[in-house]
Amino acid sequence: MADGDGRLVIGVDIGNSTTEACLARIGADGSVEWLGTGLAATTGIKGTPGNAEGVHEAAARAVADGGCRLADVELVLTNEATPVISGLAMETITETIVTESTMIGHDPRTPGGEGIGVGTTVALGELPNCGEGQDVIVVVGAGEDFEDVADALVEASRRGVGVRGAILGGDDAVLVANRLDETLPIVDEVSLIDEVPLGMLAAVEVARQGRTISTLSNSYGIATLFELDAEQTKMIAPVARSLTGNRSAVVVRTPGGDVTDRRVPAGTLSLEGESRTVTVEVDEGADEVMASLARVRPLVDASGESGTNVGGMIAGVRDSMAEMTGQDPGEVAIRDLLAIDTLVPQEVRGGLAKEVAREDAVLLAAMVRTSRGPMEQVAAEVRRVLGSAADRAVEVEIGGVEADMAVRGARTTPGTGSEIVVLDLGGGSTDAARSDGDHQVESVHVAGGGDLVTTLIDAELGLGDKDVAEQIKRHPLAKVESFFHVRHENGTAEFFDEPLEPELFARVVVLTDDGFLAVPGRHDLATIRSARREAKRRVFVVNARRALEQIAPGGTVRQLEFVVLLGGSALDFEIPDMIADSVAGFGIVCGTGNVRGSLGPRNAVATGLVAAHAAGGDQVSGAA
Image (cartoon, rainbow, N blue to C red; front, side, top):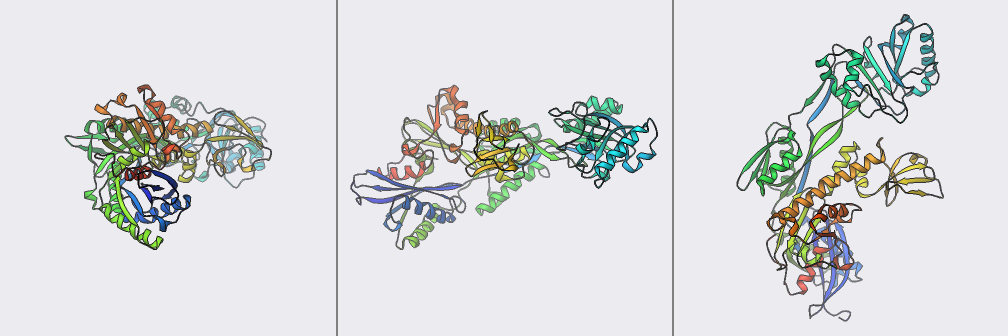
């Protein structure tokens, strides 16, 4: 069509996290000239009048991209944006507790010496009073000079005192070890050194560089050193478990101390389906929760046992969603759950050096699909905001159901057939829509998306920083091996002409778009990569299979032919391949969408809105 002919129309897709827009010129004959696209963060809760500002931002960017003015736009089409809101919570279901004076630990960065020593704990100042042949573990306060400590240990050894090891409050283990006549295991950085019990039998173990301890991480090794009976060995097992993988460790055994591995009562989850209700104990694990969910599908609502962890989790998710949507909590129904078993580092209660143990936890993602407020209210607010910005009235219409439009937009991906399934990989949920070729569309929504992946990475690595976890999720890793080269996670090396920053040396880094980001903590590259990939598998691969099974004819995934991945997470550097690999055995063609052959997995719904309007409202019809 000639420039200037036809109507300027904007299609707008209001999503949970982002709002996408496309600008097109539609000719009198129904021809479409695509002009520009825009992307903005969604403002307010999807499907509420608060979306108007985000729509304005996305529309303005699309207009600018197309070289037009907002005042020239005659029609804005929005999707029927029913909110799908997700929340998540996590509870540990085991807990290691150290009571009274028993100490476990400890893995400082630079212990001194090597070997294992057993003796009675004595303060450094009491060392001159120790007699010949007495085996001791010396406890040194944080303020002591390392040369004075080394001299005292050497002097005691020359008098015949059996100095078997040392526990230091400061960070001087290597300096002390280098000044001794014999090799002793020395552990430092014990922050609560004043609380280490004296006069008690203790064991100190330090492994060689590159190795991990073998005796104090073995329940029977501890039992041998402390001459424990069967019942006492069962009691000490959590100590051994928490020390696994450490290069150094200390265990002090006292009659008054106790170590227990306590199961936290996680509670019972009640799942209500259309025809039956099933209860399941959360501490039986995520697999049992998901198997119970499959037995009651479709889920009508879920509730947790009052006074238990899961009861508090479900109530918290329900209350937060009610607050977001303005509904009464009693009216909020949970329509899907995703349970994931995980191990999270938790500080050991009663430890003396902030020791951590990896505790069992269950992570639950819950999803509510609500119908708050008619879309006409959203359209009216968009009409007002855009009219003010354009300084004239702008026509706004609800152009169609979101699933219908997603299928129509996805069909513009080259190589797709008429019967396709769209998987929208979002931040809070994973959505699927299927067209059977006769333009009938059905859709499902399952809980769990990109936000859940970030939470899993943050929890399992003990980062305590969602921003860093988000960067780990989005980008590959490397290990800085020198000031001039890094080793990428695929094993290849990259060299640099200019030296890297000194603080990056020997660190694992994330290869972000803005440069290298050092990962906090002491995890190696393989551990971080494994946590990242496993989090993506347990959320997106599992959810893709769940959604496809629910939407496939007769629940038979093998009957599907084409699966098109859309949404922000479809841009991830490994999620699309992981999903494609998981369904390859069913003969399914699966890959990242390329809307209109150029936009990738973005803009499918907005494109579908414009295309449907140009076709005279001949939408892909059906119930979503």
